[in-house]
Image (cartoon, rainbow, N blue to C red; front, side, top):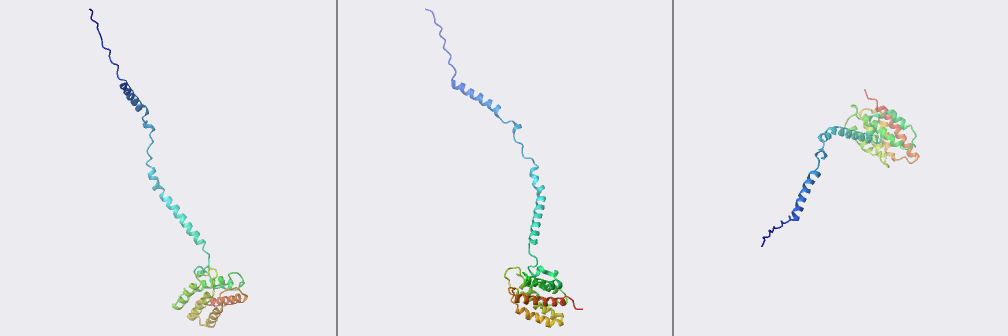
Length: 225
């Protein structure tokens, strides 16, 4: 009986092994093809950008200072001139006071403007060496206090007129004996003023006071030898 040569059939490799190998190949290919190119990476910020701020800081400060100065200047320019005795200052003269006194007493703010001018020239006179003493200083402070709110509406002018007459008399007593009668008359007249200008009588009284005060100031403006 003849021998039959039987060969065993080789087993086929597992399909899962093939799938695993294929996955590895795909992963390696994806790594090389999809990795970012160094040339495409964003460049780091320029080093000079960090230095730009300090370089421009002086310009920014200068601009801010200019704006602040302009704001202060605009605020100063917006302040109404002559609203207080301090605003009038030494720029007022006996001549300008006389001109104001001789104008129309029925004009708006006639008495207010006249009192402001009178206050300005009187306060200026108290700085003279021959008129400076405790009495005139006290009367000057009373006048500036009484006229500090002349710019506000419905402010009575009477306290300012009374204080102005008191300062004129104090300066007269200091160096001008010839003005005694005139100074006493101003004090008496100031006490009769209502501080308003609503009627013709009130307007005339205001003009009378300012006219006599201007005449006294003209004499006080000439220093004694």
